[in-house]
Amino acid sequence: MAWHQSLCNSCLDACEPRAIQFLGLWKPQIEMDVCNGCGMCVGICPSSAIMIQEEKKA
View 1 (spheres, helix red, strand yellow):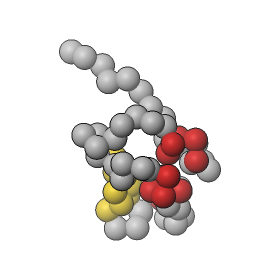
View 2 (cartoon, one colour):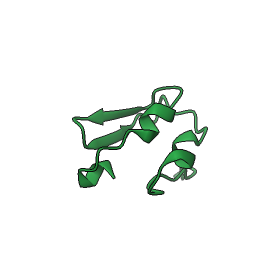
View 3 (spheres, helix red, strand yellow):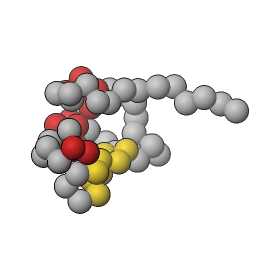
């Protein structure tokens, strides 16, 4: 939603380790070194825009 200029901070508020940062109002970024993979952001997202995937090892 934020990428389409709809102000939404649901994931930001739900993120306990504070791994989600917004660049300005509209560009959410996930700090992968801070994210613990709990999935709280996935469950609270009203547009189902977030998913967790296992990182592929090369």
